[in-house]
Image 1 (tube, rainbow, N blue to C red):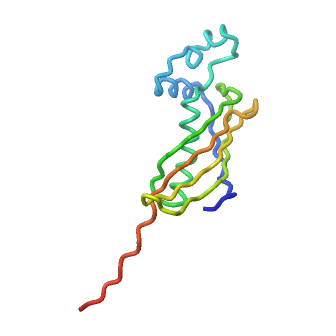
Image 2 (image 1 turned 30 degrees about the vertical axis):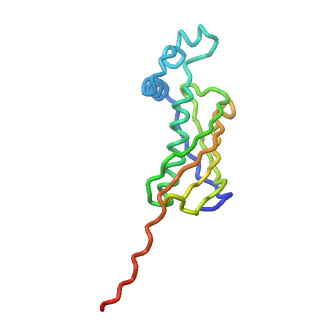
Length: 148
């Protein structure tokens, strides 16, 4: 991995089930995330995905990529996220990313990778994020031993 490297895109269909399940899982009981009538009464055309579900999708996108490339369990260290347009049922969210930096100093036996992420749907930019993910450094090769 190196700075400037593009991640393959991830396409996520935004379903009513995803929106409601994400809201319930994150204990976000605001009616605009599960009740279409209440959402319309508040001026939006339908229920919409909450920030915590978006955050989870961004995290999944980055950790799946790093795990696939390195074959090791990546850990989210920092996520900075900014929401743009809403995501409604029937939208398709497309996540794209680019590696910003790779710190291979193996501080505390970790390699830290910083990745920028953008997510768009039919309305425009839904999310912009910067994610720092740590991956355990590869194990050191075994020391050679010579017989006495």
